[in-house]
Length: 334
Image (cartoon, rainbow, N blue to C red; front, side, top):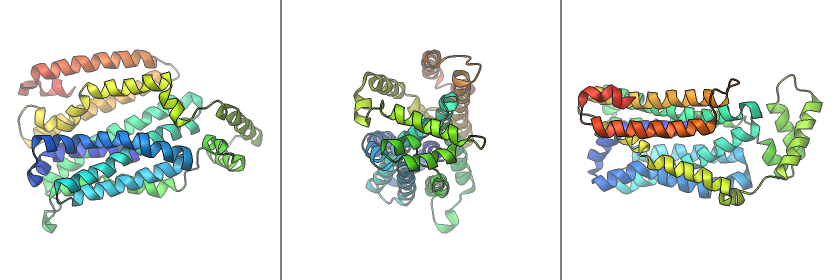
């Protein structure tokens, strides 16, 4: 749900960007900063907030902190009365996104069985892309119905405020989530780790199975590194490089600025173009998670990474070639 909130924000901002720009009379530089600020602050959240919270206070509390930040950020953006207030709201949202992204991935990795781990981690990204589509649709419907106008509230404020709802719902469920057994073992709390394993285990699991899993966790925890060591390791460098290169392709810019850069037309046409982009991304995530981690293992992760990068290059080239052609809108969306 936290990742859906992140995706919702991406979709809603894309649809609401032009009315926000008019409301605050933003320059192009300010518009670009407000739009991309979420990613900048998310990086800070992942590095500073998540690292400390994850290692010191646990995965569950990090998820709760992320939810609070996302709720506060959504409300702050919706209530902003100046460019500075808008930036503060985006700061809170970005810190929440960074914290949530890190905590969600690590939490799922640590509680999931090895055969399901890849697919479940991929579901984090699937949730983001589902949220993007929901954000597109919700913002379009709010604008079409002029929801909030009867209370003298601009529709874009309603759309941005709704981003707090998924995190609010998440807060109601996260209370019942068990803490990561691996983190509890690392903090020398074996009794709490066993209780957590009992809650996570399947109903047919015996006490012997749980004890064996607990012993296995104790052995592997000794081999794990700290947050800092993992970040500075060669593997951490490769992971960071992949993330940076993915962002540098410019695909995120298309998600945010699609209504501006897609061929001219009505709000409905631009909305359909947005949904086409988001749907293509969502379907790609589903296919990738299945092909990389299903029992049939149709394709490996390395092959999918290389193939996906090639597809991005081709897609960007097509976009650059036909971005001024109205008849090419379905092709651009794909």
